[in-house]
Image (cartoon, rainbow, N blue to C red):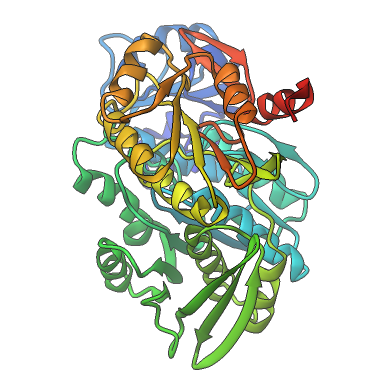
Length: 485
């Protein structure tokens, strides 16, 4: 593909250079192949310009960046925003996209909303896919991953592949990192969803205002003109999300207890817990619906309503969408019931931030007639400020707390645990995560409920620079199979 076609109007290119052919794109010099166009991106830890020589040696036909090196052996193309230029080039290089694309952002709930939207569309007869923290899920290929929003090349390649597979409807997670780093630019987003905002990623975002602004880029810049904006209306920042969408002229659908049930939104009139399900009273366009949601927790109601709004906002019949909610299955590792001991249910959840931990514990409180038990830790090399907050939340919302390790990375695990323990009064410390889970299960009695929080779907424990195999699901299963049950 000629450079003029890849870069469009993002750069002024001399005719001779514009006519050069690129056979691929690369942002990592180690992945460059002969004929690739290399993008030298400046990061928080290093400058991509340092790797230009390596990229050229590997066969890069040209380099794109915001500042040229002193010498260069291949053409250097200067652009004001190399990250955005990369995303748009990737969209041109991988041009196929599903006709209907929904993106969801927010601190918590993105994975569930994307999975729920995919399930709703599937039930309505559409070939559907989702992309996010648990990877790519589609009818013909499932690829498990670890990044909420992949890099632009990987993202657009995946979107192109599933579109060529026949996928017509896609829901994907839009992380604050992905939005701030322009990874999603070039995706033709039909509708955007906003769940909530709470403390997270303060190791990346300098302020909460910066964090929110990154999220709102979805509505201010990326959703196609005339697209739908589905906003959970029950949070402090909901008004800012609605204003961002309104200022673009998007079709706003407010959902939740403060949702606009008389209009295009969805209002939650009431919710009643029945076993491991909840009966919801909904109103949309003045019409009332009663549905049984087979999920636990108030936050799952929010996720279900945002996903329903995305389906309705992209043209699906409301009655059919609400009926499909009765068949939803929770995303892997999202308040997932994975077993029981002495009649006490055991749940695994990805909650690794304060608000998510609080919501998960509050959701399980009705199922703990005796003791609510939680096992959790906090990641290393991440926002350390949330550790004492999570300790306090655990102590306030659970009856028994065990602090353990969760991806300590380069930090000393005992130091991380100490920061949590400082506010988790009465908590026990068991550093070995498998041992902590086994101990919690051994002590379960009838009337208890156990939450193993932090890792969810993950299958590795990051210690130092090494990823050791570890799964909360497998640790629970091993404890139950060892004879303690």
